[in-house]
Amino acid sequence: MIDLADYETYLTPNYGTPPILMTEGSGCQLTSATGETYLDCAGGIAVSALGHCHPALIESLTNQAQKVWHLSNTLANEPAIALAKALVHATALDQVFFCNSGAEANEAAIKAARRYASDRHGSDKDQILCFHNAFHGRTIATVTAGGQPKYMQGFGPMPGGFSHIPFNDCQALEAAISDQTCAVMVEPIQGEGGVRPICPTFFQKIRAACDRVDAVLIVDEVQSGMGRTGKLFAYEHAGVEPDILTSAKSLGCGFPIGATLCKHHVAEHLTAGTHGSTYGGNPMATAVALTALSLINQPDFLRRVEQSGQYFQAGLVQLNAQFGLFEKIRGRGLLIGAVLNTPFAGRANELVKLAHQEHLLTLVAGPDVHRFAPPLIISETQIDDALSRLERVYATFSADTAMEMN
Image (tube, rainbow, N blue to C red):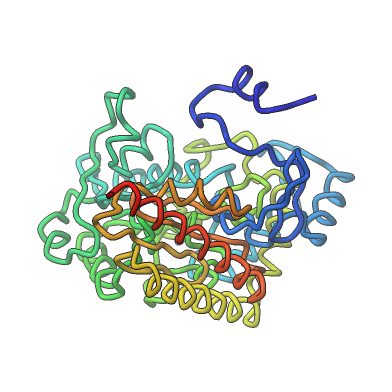
């Protein structure tokens, strides 16, 4: 019999102890070891775009598992080639490197940008310009790119060559970028940093600044990509083309995979032996991701995601009119953040815990933002159900806060 006591005993404590042990999932619903069902508005942190145990994904995984599991990159496999071709045809990019996670995809992007700059301009052009409140992963290089002290503390020294400026600040951008800048690394929506969408004008200014100094524009779409905003990738909303695009999370809809997509002028510098991944391009991972891409990248599907996001946000706005907990509701598509008003700052995790009591799974994005990233297949009926549960959550939170003040 496996239980949460075994979790504490046998797993490292870096996640704390999760409050619920889940055993099954279907669509937007998860079932715990005690048989209780939960409505999933967290999506495995924006991973389970097609919900849990989608039949088409199961079929792809099962079919490929009966053929070949692993080949290493000294040999080619059909699903990896097919997925790379599909991603290139669906985006503004030209070639693909496969890996296993978002952090690895961003690590590869950093290396590709540095290699491009070194080959073209010499080793002194090494600055990577990043943004406050960013999140790009948990490796040493990607936590440095993210720049958040809480993720770096105790792991120093950090690599050099990374600079950080305020997000959506055009003046700071112009002051910081220089001939030593080899790349600008940005999320179209800062996910972990509070569900902050990029200003389209700012995005366009980044593109122009990169062109001016021959720097590579790295767009991190690990969380915002694969249909979550109502476009296949969020950069499309601003009409800005990246030189490097990173993807993971919903790319495999739960099967581990990451991808670093590059323009030709960058990819050509990743010559044989410059980078690699033992499991990158795994046949099972790429087979599942190819099916996920084919299901998500459909006009009707993406249109429905955009409509569902608007419907969910409108419901949250109505709840906020009732309870007054939030300064604003922001985001795009089905990546939504409710930003707590100043009197409630730092208490977003309390809302997540109260939601558990209502059998609703939600997220935080920092201490001040209640975040929602449900499966993209969520229906209006399920959104109504989530909003009804949130009404009880916010009512309880408001009542508890009133009692504390008295």
